[in-house]
Length: 85
Image (tube, rainbow, N blue to C red; front, side):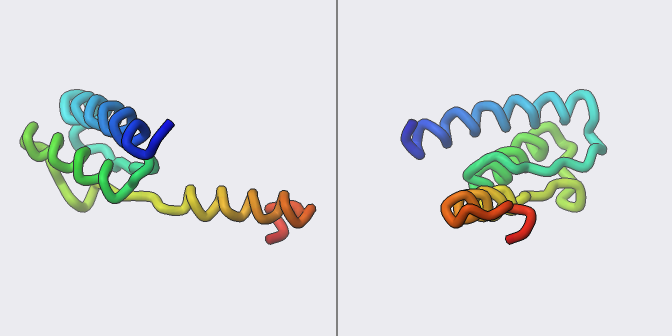
């Protein structure tokens, strides 16, 4: 899967989730962890904005997923437990 494929897939999923949140739980706190976060958060925000329920205090982009993955890969390569890195 290319980065473009990943973006298109995740963008579609995020947009659908945003539409559902706008309709069913417009005051929810939402954390987006789907890559690329710098592109999927604005998609979610714009979808909420179009529905008239966007509140920037309730939408967050989570970037720690890549850090956790990197720690796991490095720990595996070094023969360590990721919890100890």
